[in-house]
Image (cartoon, rainbow, N blue to C red):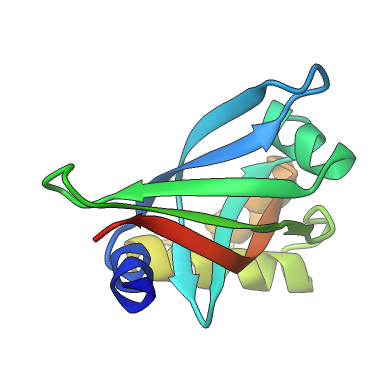
Length: 136
């Protein structure tokens, strides 16, 4: 069953990131993501609730569903955050390019994209999956 759940994660690009708010309640965010080698990767903006929540408490759950909505996978793990993009050619922006390519393919202007990642103060959230459950 776990292999089918991991395959579901590999076969979709949209999901829901769940973080823990200061008051202990869940905060959910619809996100695009990529999953490979047991790690979910998401592009996020510094200063957003999900980013602040993960800095305070890195425990995360991630929900993805099949197009039929009858199958789903929930992946859990402890999030790692890259540094905020500071230069169009730093390691964070390079990883953001990888994430974009995995989700959407080629960008029409990579120089523009790289500059936007710095201007938007983007970073990558990595969630190494330690547990997965659901219905496949």
